[in-house]
Image (tube, rainbow, N blue to C red):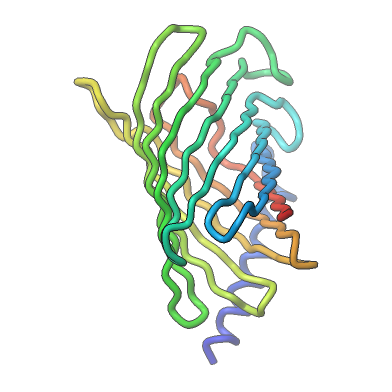
Length: 223
């Protein structure tokens, strides 16, 4: 009975994503390429590139590159170190000047995972040290992400997540933004996973990337 309910829910999610894509005039796009290389049983190297637009594959305003070293401590605990380059551009065109933020990030992260039958609960905790080349300023931020997925079949799952951001280290520490995503992930050929999500972002900061509603595609490749 539960499996039947989850399949119905999965169908509703797919139809809702199609409806959003077809009828939204202000739906942006969020594309991610995630390459992962297993070094040994404990270490995985990860290279990720992202590009985002404020309209549906139009008015690209943001890109980032990340290099990550993941070290597995236990089957359900992974520590990571990240180095990233992030650039936000002026709205109204494709990577339009002047640049809004020219940023480099150094982050430490811990990820946990628990399985409950076909449900998987993932939590991610990250501290980011941010340096902005264009303003010569430093900033520190904490991020917490909670994700729940359900295996419909062995190679297909639906997923929902929420992530919130908190600025740290100054007298005006505030809640920066919140990201909610819902969608599904399909794995195939033991090396590839494609995720399709609808992502909604509430942002209280004017210096970060803008946009609130995105059609997100994540392509993961394992080597």
